[in-house]
Amino acid sequence: MAKFEQPFEDTQEIFDQVIETTGLEPETNKIILIGIKDNRGFRTILDSYDETGKWTEEKERQMITKFFETIAERTPSIITGYNSENFDWDFIIKRTGIHGEQIERIASTLKYDSEIKRKKATLKMGAEMEYYEQTVMWGYNIMDIWHAVRRAAAINSNIKETGLK
Image (cartoon, rainbow, N blue to C red):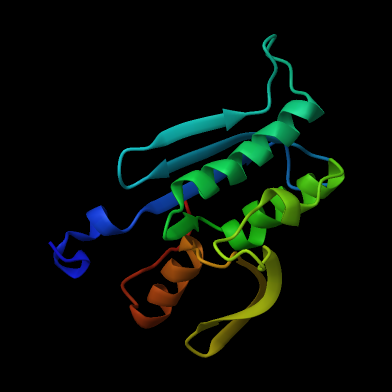
């Protein structure tokens, strides 16, 4: 069967990620969990606790590294998250630096001479525009679900709220 004849879920892996933190500032707060699931049944929760249940910097560093290893192993076509461009990716990248790691060393792309980066981007919602930092990993489509919902709400007046809860 040709790839275009297969059902979407058989040809594309969609990764959804979420982080749980101890606060809103990556300089003073920590990542305690990263949840990952996909449309093929893969589910995992990575945590930054040692065997005694205590959070450690080393475990947080290992958790972030494992997050990027999981992306490299599974090579999803799409990586999604809710408000991930304004929070999750920034938090992950800053916490990586706080641990003395270079994000380019632990986050691989699908092109040998390309690195993960953040670049200035614009979200256009009707007459409204918002500027943000977009995460780019060559070979992966990183999509912020909140951005998609807000764009849809700008077109469809029946969508009254775009919040998570």
